[in-house]
Image (cartoon, one colour):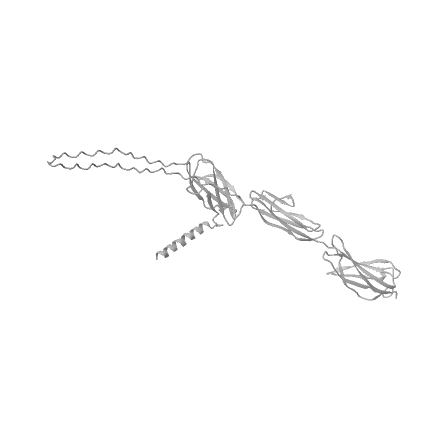
Length: 370
């Protein structure tokens, strides 16, 4: 039965400790006084007070008080767990109450944390040394008439003086030592390019976000702010670096933007024509030529070139597109030749910076005058 009660008490105490340390985003952030600790004895002179706060909405500031009077308000980085160290110079010895409260990013103020300290060395008084009086003289024995026989003399007693026990003075423990806390370096939350792959001659947008109190940020050797972004149009695959510096050190991160180089002309295939012969003067007719043309950079134009029987080449028209099928209609009446065999080729140009060209050939059809 006794062991059961002890286990229940331990579980209750552990639950209360966990509940006290868990930050609450609805009741304001929780604050702790890290230095000086409650009950500490400090020498008279400049001191440092260190505290930290925690809240799911982020800690915006820590407010320090001494005996209820405001000392200083220290802004923080807005993280879930933040800390701050401030100076305090008590003017006289005494007992002081150092307190701190935290405010989250929503303006909620959390409960107050306290630490009662003693400033100035207070020596405990030494106990007086008890005085030792002189030894009392023994009372002389009562004279009794001696009998006729000789009696032996009574023994002589030597009194023992009282022993005094001295109590040494109580020594004051030295004040606790304080080790300054080194802040962490800045944090690169994001650093990305959109898109991360670009065709030759096109651009990308590089953006970033840095937190943790950076004092300097450099992108591609240019001083920048956070959050921020820059447009870059690389001619080849390029790596970019972001550097952030703060009181706690330096961090850096790199990313690579790939450039897609298109050095080939469009692909031309599946060439078809609607007829093998057309008429020019009587019952004039026309012929339609089509082809499937594609390119990773896109297709800028497709053109038809004709070669006559007498020799010589001329432009016979430009293709129009529907999906990736390009087509052109040839009407003999619109050209100088109205008879013979017409041979043709197809020229396609892509939409890259280089303007790559490819050719397809050769097709032919007959032209009849009547």
